[in-house]
Every structure is written in structure tokens, then in C-alpha cells.
Length: 423
Image 1 (tube, rainbow, N blue to C red):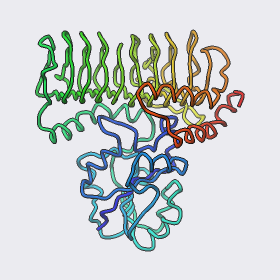
Image 2: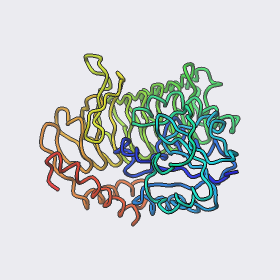
Image 3: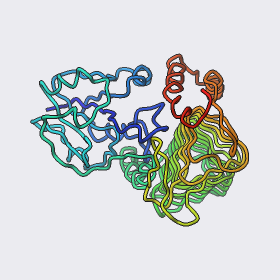
């Protein structure tokens, strides 16, 4: 019986760039929980290790003390792809107690693999490498139907459903809301039984939480200013701030520790990112430590209503979807009144400003105005800005994070060179 589980990254991680430059794929969020946290919930009695790209390993060891990183102990292990969205049925489809070695496959991609003995010994020799189906050659295969993300928009498409499932999982454990003495009498809770409000939440008069279309989870110490509206399913992470008049529509995940305002719909915003002011953000995925200036607006629907195409790995990918907005990497910044076309991708630590629309693909560490030639954002300046931003939240940028910034700058050099940007 394999009680040891390794969550791994495979060769298809690159389809989720730039969102996964600073994190393994399983640290992406969908619903309330990250993909990794969903797996933890699916196998509560298992002992976990995590596998990632080599350059992320030292950083992940710092962030996950006591957890094995790129290391397997014992003589049997259940490997699970970090791109899986695990639900309540997943552990039944991929049981821990499988006796024989087996590879679970979905559309010629490894979902999971129970490996032991000689097969495991062979894998351990190159555990720091990205895994693929060929690494499990010689092991019997079984097709399985699961949710396996490939692109950023897959997370958005699944977010509404995952919000509902995560709410049931978490609120079922908590059983009741926190203390409500800081909630003003002028707050309106529609379908209150479908709303969870954690401890320390402050809500001002005129706030509307509408859970008639899906649940709403408000995390600890959230502040909601007057006349904000939140329509479920939605999640506001702990210590976040929702500004006056904010319109948070269904399918939205925010935080923790974010400041949001304006109009947000069907979007995921990672922790420590801000969209404080007016402007529309729809069907978008925003990384950590990003900041959207006042008036920043994203188009998530083409005027001709055709499906949206997105640049992935230098090629155009047809999403097959009518609604796709912005993918914004960690530490990216937009100036006031910035505008983005449908399906735009902006890399990590980029700074966008000026009139008009920037290109639909902006490489990481770019600096420039829309409609003009972009230049490379100097790595020392980029790190200095990140350090200043983090200090505002009383967080010190560590030596391992400094090293990670510089490695990612090197990794992204080719994409800037291909677009004629000076290195």
C-alpha cells in the first residue's frame, strides 16, 4: 500500500507560463484552494512530497519546511500530476491501496502512477527532471477521466464549480460562521445559509452579499467598505480589502491579502495583488504581487464574438472560448487607464503604461508604453521594486527570492530576444 504521495510537475508545465515561473503548477489556485491543497484533502492520511523544476527546488524547501522536495523515500510511491483538479471522486479513481504498479492516463498524459521496486529505483535516479509518459514505460496503463488543466483559461473555466465544491468542503469542516459583531445592520445577506463569514470580518452599510446563485466565503479579517456587492459563488481571502462600490461578480477568487475595487468577474487573483480602483477585469488570471493601476480595463469578449486566441509558447492557440481576458504574471504592473485586448498575456515583472493597447503578448521583464517599442526591465531595478513593494506588507525579500528572480530573468531572455528587445 503506497501511503507516500509525490505531487509532480510534467513536461507540459510550460503551457501555463508565465503564471508558473515563480511557482510549481500545483500552487496555482482554482476555487478557494490551490491544486496542491485539493490533493491534500483528497488523501488526508497520506505522507506527501513535492517535485518541481530544479531552479524552484531551493525556494520550495524554504517555503515548505519539513516537506521532501525532489526526494522520494521508501520503496513504493503514488505519483500524481500537479495539474490535476482533484475532486471528491478522485481518490476513488486513483486509490492509495492499489497493489500492482500502474499508470493512470488521460489523453496520453500521465495523471498518476503507482510505482514500486525496480520501477521506482529507476525514477529516483532522475527525480529532479520533468516527468513524462515515457518515464513510466513498461508499466501497465489504465485510462481515467479526470480534470487535468493545460492552460490558464482552464482554471477560469473550472473556477465557478470549484468554488462551490471547496465551499462545501471547508464550511463542512468549520460548520458555522465566525463572530458577526462587526457587521453593520445595513448589510444585506441574500440566502444567508450559503454564506460563510470568518472571524474578524468588518462589513459596512450598503454591502450586499448575494449567495442566491452560489456560495460566498469571506475569510478572516476581511474589510468590506460601504456599498460593495459580492455575487456568489465567490471567495474573498483573509486580510483582503474590498473598496467602496466594488462589484464582485460570480466565479471570482480573490486573495488572500488583496485590495480590490471596480468591476471583477470570473477571475482569479493571487495573494498580495491589488486592483483597487475602477475598471473592468473579466475572465482573467492575475499572479501574486501584481498591481493594476486606476482605470485598467480588460476586454474578455471579441466584437465579432469569435473564439479567443492566446499566444502560448510562441504559437497561437485557439481557446475555443468566447470569454478570455488577461493573463498577468507575478510582480507585473499596469499604469492608470491601461487597456488590454482579449487573450492578452503579460509576463512576470513587466511594467505597462501609455495610451492604446499593448501587444497581445508581452515578454517577462518588459518595460514600455503601448504602441511603442518595449525595452528590457533591468533585473536589479525589478528586484529593488519588488523589495519595496513587499516591505509595504512587512515582508522581506529573501536571498532565495533574489536568486529566483535572477534565474527567471535568464530563463526569459530568449522570448525578449525573439521580439527584438535589447537584452
